[in-house]
Every structure is written in C-alpha cells, then in structure tokens.
Length: 248
Picture 1 (cartoon, rainbow, N blue to C red):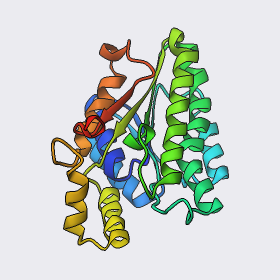
Picture 2: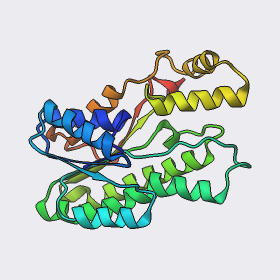
Picture 3: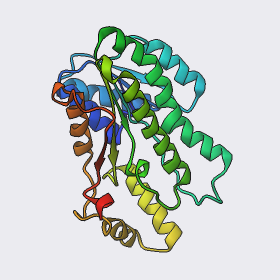
Picture 4: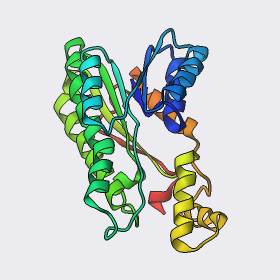
C-alpha cells in the first residue's frame, strides 16, 4: 500500500513497485487521480491495483482504512504528507495538529494496522517518506520539521522492536524533489523573502553540492531497494536523498 499515491513522489513509488509485479492499494484524496494512477500501474506491470480514496487527516477515514487493510499488507509506504510554511509565531494549534495528523499520526495508525499481519507471516517492509527536515532544522517549517522528526522516531523505535522478526522499518529522507509540492514551497519562499521565483530556486540549489533538485524516480527506486531481499539487513535507516546538502 502506498499513501499519497495520486501524484508526485507517491505516484512514482507506485509505478516503480508495479514494475516489480506488486499488487497495490493506492490511497489518496482524489478518486480521479487515483484512477489515473491505477491505470498507469497496471500498464507498468501490476497484476492488480485497487484504489482507496480517503482523506487521512480525517480520523474516521484513517481508522476505516486501517480496519480494511488489517492483516493484508506486506509492504507499507507512508508517503502522504503536508509541508505548510509559517514562522513559529504564525503557526497556530490547528496547523500544528493537522500537520502532525498527516505526517506522523497517520503513519503510526497504519503501522499498527499492518504490523500484526507482517509479524504473523514473518516478513514485512515499512518505509516512511520523511525528509531532510527529519534530520535538520529549516526556517518557516516548525510544524513540518517537528512532525518529520517524530516520524523518524517512530521508524527507529519500530525497527528496534520488530527487527528480529522478519520486518524492517526504514525512512527515506529526500531534500527538495522536483514535484508540484516543491514548486509551491519555492513560491512561498519567494513571497516571504521578496525574491523572484528563480532567485528563490537558486538560493535553495546553492545549498546542494549537485546544484539540482532530486528526481522523484530516485526516491522511488530507493524505496524499491529497501523492499528487496538485498536490503534485508537495512533496518532503522534514515536514507538521505539530498545531493549532499546535509554534508555541506
């Protein structure tokens, strides 16, 4: 199962897993986008692709999804997320709770729903799509950064608890990925700083030794690797995909 699978990184993850022959459940808010994603996954090689249109910020929808998949999922990719931008002073309680709800609470609920079946079968893979913000602080992103730190904490705790029972739990931590979400983030940076959009982009790229955005396909292929038997010994990792940003 892949959450946030209708577009962006999630769609590329779904298609990459489909190419490996995975039977998929795609979760997202838009039924239309999920139907398009399902068609693309079948064309890529998935023998079966189901869709589940749900808003994971709604507790009832989240718990309904958890109940419907209990015991049935071997591979869980928690990709759905939100990246609001605001100073700490401007971050209200509602924004904080909504961001944590999608970025850390939803993965927690879905992990709890899927882990018992994985443990019963003696095999399972959980990958949470975190961010370099799980490893580093960024301005204007207090809710996002805190929620991604929490998500990485969940990864590490679960990996230690279940690593000896055939289940691995890992995170990928992309930097700025070439998606609509990143373009919106760059637009917000431009608005807050008074820079032109291209200047905002150059300011972000200047922190990256490779001077480029990460391609969503790179994130997807990293996740395919973490699902593989080759990666059976990879557990509790936080894999940065940032072009060297955190080292610079």
